[in-house]
Structures are given as structure tokens and as C-alpha cells.
Length: 225
Image (cartoon, rainbow, N blue to C red; front, side, top):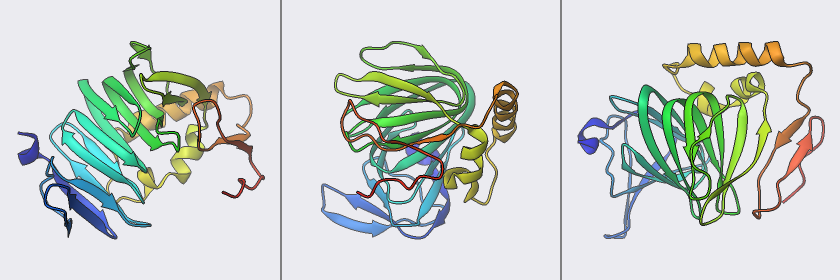
């Protein structure tokens, strides 16, 4: 059922499909049905969108992922945005090392970390996130959480500026159609701005290990790799 309902609704740049069993590479096109046996990889500056009856998934530049089922996504590298209004949504998210389960409804971004885990960024959510060591963590809009380790656990949480993210995120802005939850995202931003006494003055970077995280202030140049 999942394979017949999911299709690529938008594509920009280069998106390759990789068949591990046959060691073959092809190129994805708009209106292609998603094949759960293939990996999908985007080139630099490339992106694409998958729609189904219940959700939207947007995959960013330099990402490598497999869409195993409508409720199961594996992301090796890069980032994706997930959007669903359905309150009974269930999504298993796996990276190279870590796994978490999202239950509920909402819009969030997943961004892979160098340590094998990932950042989970809820833009607007009514739901929970679970890991092996942390069941049913209530999600807070605008609060970034780290999912790290195996068995997986939730690392530190960091408040982020939703308005800044909305203005700068290509997963939100560089697509021809608006997200179905855009009104809810706008409301989450409004509520956060009412509570915000001052601008956030830091950006959250990558994490090379489970115990380290890059953070730099606005106006500072991120350290060279």
C-alpha cells in the first residue's frame, strides 16, 4: 500500500536511486512512486518532496535516506522535514547509530550528526518522542533535542528561535507549495515570541561525539573543519 501511495511531488537538482542488491544507480523523476527497497541520495543544492495521503516528507541537500514504509524512515546523512496533521501518526526514525519513535501530529526536522545520532527539531507538535532509554518524552515546540547512542537516549534539549529557523530553513522555504501545517507553525512562532524576552544568541552545530556539541554565537564564524 505504501509504495502505491507515495510519490515524488517536487524535485530540484539531482536525486539518485541506489539499488544495493543489483549494484545499480538511476535518477529519480517527478511523479515517480517511492520504492521502499531503494536508497535515495541528493546532490549538493538538490532537494525533493514526497507526498502520501497522510504526510509530506522533504529531503534536503546532500542527504542519503531510505523510506522503508510510511511509518519507517532511515537516514544515513543529511536532513529531512516531516509534516502530518493526523493525530495518530507513528514514525520510526533511524540513523547510522540511533533510533527514536514519534507519535502524534506535527511538523519537525531531523538533521544527522557526525556521531551517528540526529537532531530532532519540532516546529509545531502535539506528540511524544521515545527512545530505548526514554519513553514518551512530551515534545515542546521550538525545543531541539538530541537523539544519540545505541541503545538510544535523549541528550540535552536546547531552545531555538523558530522565527529565525522559519526564515533560514531551505526545507521550509525552497519548495513551491506551502506546508499544510503552516498556520500551526505560525501560531507556534507567535506564542514563542510572546514568551521571548530577548533574541537567542547562539546556533546549534554538529556533534562529533555523544558528549560534545558545537555551539557558536551570532556574529562568530563557525570553526573550520
